[in-house]
Image (cartoon, rainbow, N blue to C red; front, side, top):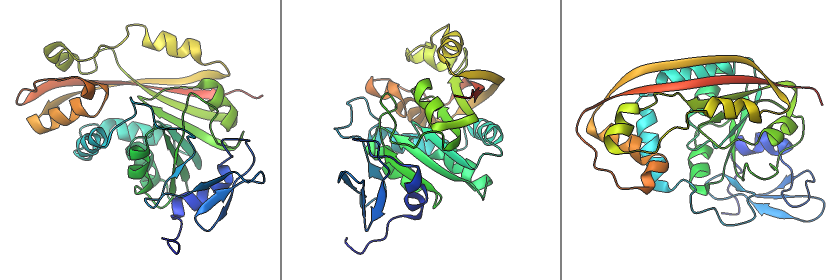
Length: 273
């Protein structure tokens, strides 16, 4: 694989990356990224870069979960949310998605925004393998959002977080002053019928209050609710259950299912440091 070129998406975001050991800038040499302190990281043959420095946690998305998510999202069942995400990020040119999974949402934004370059970060190597293939303007890096992100301070225009862990201090650090943070959380009635019938994991009743209370360094500038009905065939219902944390529990999925998709799209603005 020595002659295999580094994917365009990763090459485009090298200047954004920092060494996860010493926070020094990284430079690309062949298929290796290294810093001045001789910490080196090889680009995987699938096109992503692993800067996690440890094994992925046991609750990281599995290949089976990602395959189910890819099928479900490709079916267009959450297309209204995808369109809202694109609108919320409009005008941004340098965007990070944390907990990016397959890269569906950030990839859709790139499809609609020819001048943008984006970085997908996920703690799951399997997720980053998917994301690395999503767009030639998308780099994919394995990293943990709960730790310091291996990303330059103040260099990004927007951060996207869809149903993913949040680290407001790190988001504020990597964003330029005035940059935006778009957070998608489940609405109160999200999949309520399916949750009731299958005993799926519940939604915390004070989720928005906790979100707002955690956003030190940001101010809320916009909040929208999006609700629509879903009539899912059995295959799509199985994928919906299998693509998230409910995949770790056994469920008997019925035939055609009617349920509600409900989302809250919150946009925050980073305050000056």
